[in-house]
Image 1 (tube, helix red, strand yellow):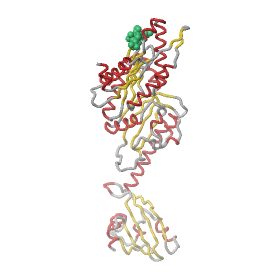
Image 2 (image 1 turned 90 degrees about the vertical axis):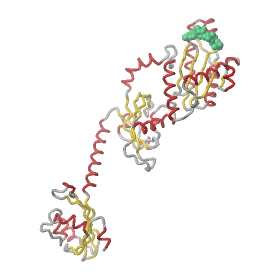
Image 3 (image 1 turned 30 degrees about the horizontal axis):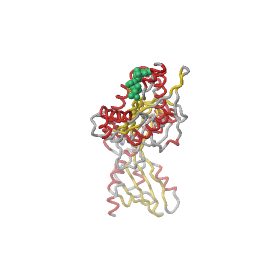
Image 4 (image 1 turned 45 degrees about the vertical axis):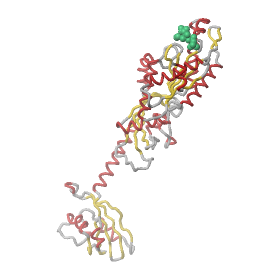
Length: 422
Ligand SMILES: Nc1nc2c(ncn2[C@@H]2O[C@H](COP(=O)(O)OP(=O)(O)OP(=O)(O)O)[C@@H](O)[C@H]2O)c(=O)[nH]1
């Protein structure tokens, strides 16, 4: 009896003909406004105007007990204003041949929310179906693709098999690091969004230039499982726009002779990378390269052959280092490579690999075959450094040590190499 009174839903016990034998306050609240004469003694009479079928449903239910209806929605005329119920949910159970139990609930808000959700879904589906050059990707907390949709298929060609993969799957191999991918999520957390522009790859291996914007989804529940959607990634194919600005970028940031980044491009990229390393600590290494006795190449074979050697060396750098590494010509026969997310030892071993590749290289131009060697100095970023100039100084000291020790070798920075340089 106490349960009947305290239940958060309307409960009505009635006889087979609808005569009410027991009801709780909530059911009275819900049914009273429906009653024509202000009396509440029969369930069927109370529902006569809004759900006349209930009487018939009960009379046609011939089994001795069982569920007559479940969650039947009753739409009330004129409801929904001033917080009045507009939709009731009604379930009726036949307890035995003589008794019915009805459960009534005001589901107005719930139904409205469902309708709004369905409407949002319809809008989103319409959007996904009509956008031509955007892929709208939901990501989980770890940045993995959470769901596939048509826009992803259209822009990137990926199928549902992409679900669960890190969003870096859209980026060509070696053009990013897991740290870089995480940076964009953290940046989005901190400032509401993050944008990255760069090369992306379709499932069939064709590249396109994309702008990628990540925004955290509102109301993310911090306790939700890691696989729940937590970010929205909007990937836009901007190859056309990029083509228009490419000439300008090339002129400002590329070395005209070798096509790698120029001094300006290097310092621009390095400042960005060190900014990231300051915010989200991770290793960064720098390798400086200087061709050995390059003056002799020019003096012996002429300047055009020297140029061909510089171009061949830049190509060797490009093929040895990862796409995410910033290969640049600082000037003359001096080159620099910035290696994000790389420890000193790893950077030294790649530099050694490069020297070995150069040793096996013969540049043939105008009937002349030229071989050459190169020296390298490698240093690693540490948080005590004021900026990129400090890192360049260290790598330069190591390079000086490599030249002093006989050339065609790699030196990693240590306090001793600083002494040598001094
Ligand atoms: N062909 C060509 N030569 C260049 C270019 N820029 C600088 N150089 C030459 O690079 C040479 C650098 O010579 P040095 O600084 O004496 O160095 P090195 O002969 O390589 O000797 P070490 O570095 O001590 O091994 C000079 O002869 C410059 O003229 C360029 O764009 N093209």
